[in-house]
Each structure stands twice: as structure tokens, then as C-alpha cells.
Amino acid sequence: MKLSVIIPIYNEESNIDELHRRLLSVLEPMALSGGFELIFINDGSRDQSLPLLLNLAARDTRVRYIDLSRNFGHQIAVTAGLDRATGDAVVIIDADLQDPPELIPQLLAKMREGYEVVYAKRRSRQGDSAAKKLTARLFYRLLASITHISIPVDTGDFRIISRKVVEGLRLMPEQNKFIRGQISWIGYRQTFIEYDRAERAGGETGYTYRKMIRLALDGITAFSDVPLKAATISGFAVSGIAFFVGLYTLYSRFITHDYQPGWASLMVSILFLGGVQLISVGIIGEYIARLSANVRQRPLYLISDTNLPPYAGPGK
Image (cartoon, rainbow, N blue to C red; front, side, top):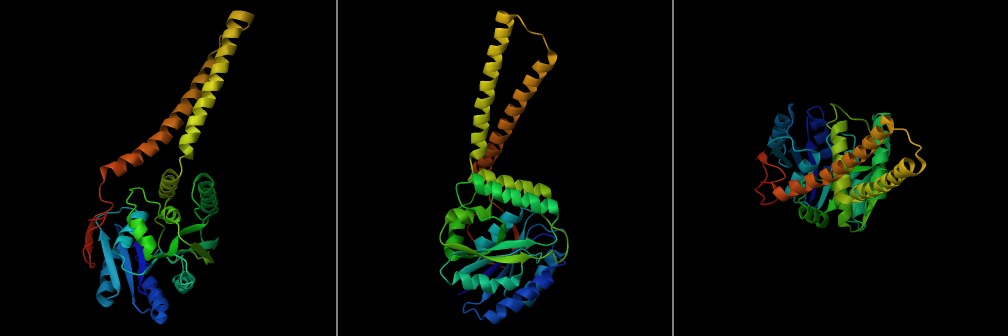
């Protein structure tokens, strides 16, 4: 078996050397018959990450690097690595050392029991703020409740997948990637192992709240039409309420003659109806924007430089 390890890089100069050292200390004793490759994808880093990767590649022939033309985002960077990975099994791991490389032998051992996907489930999360833990917990459970597929909660992209799953992911070139959801959609036998997630080793996280919200929207819109149904139902509900309010208004005006012309009630009704309409239009707009991005069929990423052979796939 040959093992590929995919590591997306964005401003990780303080962690690259230590990550490389720990990966070698784990992978070299495993004596893999087909060897292993480390694929680092530089996702438009603005620090010294790229020079460090070039130095590693010059010293270690097992190090591959892909330098993207700009920052395309974490999920696209992982996709670029998957497109170029040649291993029979592929590990996806971040460079911040929150996900321990020492867990890779356990992931591989579990896969050899007959599973196509083994993901790492977080038992605890050190170093994350209470707000981040709460929002992540709510998001995973909301996604699980509104999607039609079983997306495991409390997991990231740290996992090992088989060649079958890699080939399946290559057939899914949508622009707004949510890889953990796509892997769940593909199916096959999947399981997990639990671990305690460590604090970031160095540097600052690239996942700001803005990027987390964008990823959450990608996950929800890619695998659930519940927001669209909610917008439709709320439209009917508000229309029903407005109809009965209209009947009451006519009754008060022409039958009981008990009414007071009021600015407040008029404004409340207008603002309420306008708010529901704007929310519904916004939800529909999110779906249309993603459809538009896929219709344009632009490449998912562009490569500035790499030491990997050419690949005629989604990225050029």
C-alpha cells in the first residue's frame, strides 16, 4: 500500500518543520510497501511558508508541493491535493498540529478492517474559545437534523479515505466544496476513532468567523433544501395571517365601525411582511449564486508551481 498525506497550508511557517518531523517519525516506522508521499498545498500564504516547502522538497524526495496562484480556500486546497494524490489510501490533515499525526497508524489499522473511510471524531477541543465550541456544536447538530445524509458530528477533515472515495470525490467538481459532507454522501463503509484535539501549535488560525459562516452555508446549501422549504412555508403562513388580518380590518371598518386609524399597526405589518420577504429572497439568492458558480464551469483552482507531474483534471 502507498499512502498519500494531504496538508493544506495557509500562513503556517511556524508549524511546517515540526509537522514534517512528526510525520516522518510516524510514517517511516510503518514500513509501507508502496512508500508514502507528503503533498503540501500552499494556498496563497503571505508568510515564508512557500520557501520552507521548497526547502523541504529539496531535502526530502517524498515531499511534494503545489503552489496555488492565490488563496482559494481550505476546501479547494484539499481538493487540489486529492486530484494529485497517487496513494491507495489518503490522509487529510491540517498543518496546525491540532490533529496529531501520531493518530495515522490507528486510522490505517481501522481501514484495514474493511472500511473505506475512517474519520477522527473530537472528544474534546483544547484552545478553542467557548463561543467557537458552541457555534461548532450547534452547526454540526443543525446540519445533521436538516440534511438527508448522515454527516458525523464533531468532526473536521482529519481522516483517512480509500482510493474508491478519492475517485468519487473527483467526480464532484462543484465550486462550493464541503468535503466532509461529500464523503458522507459517497457512502461505503465508514467508521471513526475518537481523540482529544490539541491546541494550535503556533501561528493564527486561518478559519475566521467569516470563513466559518461561509463553510456552514456551503454545507447547508449543498446537502439540504430545508431553507428553501422554510421560506416557502413562512410565505404561506404570513400570507394566511395577512388574509385574516385583512378580513378583520374589513369587519371592523364596515360592520362594527370600531376602528382607529393607526400608523403603528400599519408600519408593523409592512415591516413584518418586508422582513419575511427579504429573508426568503436572501435564501433563494444563496442557492442561485451557487448554481451560477457551477454553471460558469471555471476551474476550481490554478497552479502557479509544483513538483508533481501534470494532471488533466478539474484544476489546470
